[in-house]
Amino acid sequence: MLNWGVIGLGRIAQRFCESLSHFDEACFYAGASHNPKKRQQFKELYHPEKLYDDYMKLLEDENVDIVYIALPHASHYKYALESMKHHKAVLVEKPATLTSKEIRTLCEYSEKNHVFFMEAMKSRFIPMINQVHKEIEKGIIGDIVSIENHFQSIVPYDEHSYIYDPKQGGALYDIGIYNIATVLDFVKSSVVSISNDVKVEHGVDVHDSITLEFENGVKAFMEASLDGPVRKDMIITGTKGTITLDPFYRPTKAVISFNGESFTGEIPYDIDDFHTEIEACHEAIAYIKVESDRMSHQDSIDCIELMERIGETICRS
Image 1: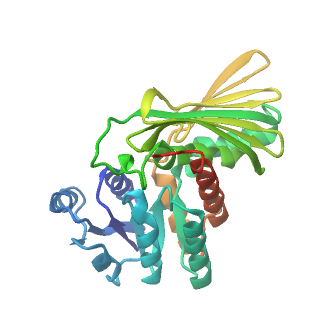
Image 2: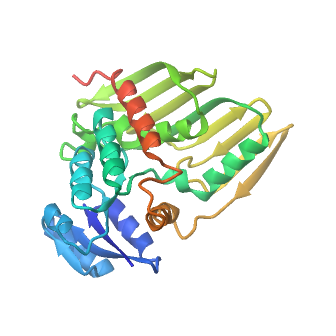
Image 3: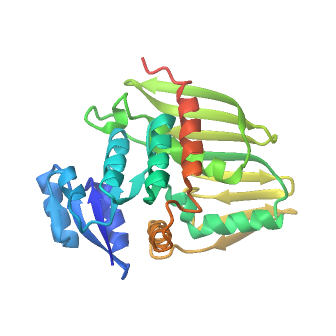
């Protein structure tokens, strides 16, 4: 039985714990939050054995095997590293860190000390995404020419929210990492050109319209926004046809178009959109691996490095 500890008891952690409850080989053993109301809420909903008011107390609990970190972005690096120093496997929410230096440090520590570490990029584990890879490998739409994806939401300004904190917030860090990770999942080439038509409000990027050009000739357009309009689709265009996913980061349906016809395929989640990500952690740990094949350390490094390069186009002052 794997005992999970959860640091940060917000909405994402609630969905995570709900998914975790469907596993026989693991359990939500301990949670940690500075907020007593959240600790009480999780106690009533999920009945963990331990609840802590201090994150370090959870890490000092010898019964915790693996830690899920669901804190604001700026805290990911510190507690991921502290978790591994306390001999805990780690699943940390995206983005795993805010800089390439930090993500390299975490990956190097994981490998040197042989402790599992993974960024929680759940899109990599969605069954439909993996099926789309298989269809593309079969050549159903030919060679990929371009990818366009949109993760556009409406998030009203809140001066108390980490999303509007200039040091860790903005559309790129909060949701644009999904755009980046998905494009890099399908395009295995180096980025040679970056442009970003960015809108900044309250010291953060609220709308990024990013164009990438890859060494192999593929082009990508990514749009991430906190100011709408709501749109969450992706179109992969090949030499023979297209594949459309909506929402692209956790799809259950795909529309494949070629030769003037369109076909819709559907693959439901295994329980929910967190389940296969959690399952991948369990499998990797069972096989004594330090990383996942689908979201490897190098994958995280590539994503954070590109996020960092795009971030250089944003003037937050």
